[in-house]
Length: 167
Image 1 (cartoon, helix red, strand yellow):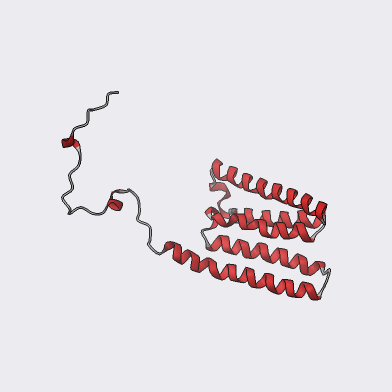
Image 2 (cartoon, one colour):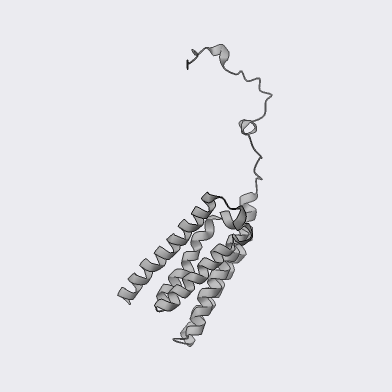
């Protein structure tokens, strides 16, 4: 392999009439407001998550030790996170890390069986995002699902151990 020597005549010359540099990049052009429209879709979901948690804290103070209310909070948070993920692109959404919120809440509210039940519920919701495409998933996508599941399980284990030692 030989490298051709540099010569100024081999450089492209601008005439001032060509399109901007973005036109030289192959592929479809992104919509200029794609991120703004994505934020507008996810914003109501996050507002619902915040509102629900504020109401939950209000009712939890009135009903101290209400286990069904605590389960309802964790399960509803997991459903709202799944809704946010679906609104922000589905399987490829970077919001999957929000599944840590109901897992951490379960670690703080429940004993061991309740924590692992909540983690199983979150994993089922996460796997449910891929339900219709399981036979079309590549090995890399399946590996990503396994890594995500492992991270969620590992985080639940560590936070539960820490919470049980502290409280």
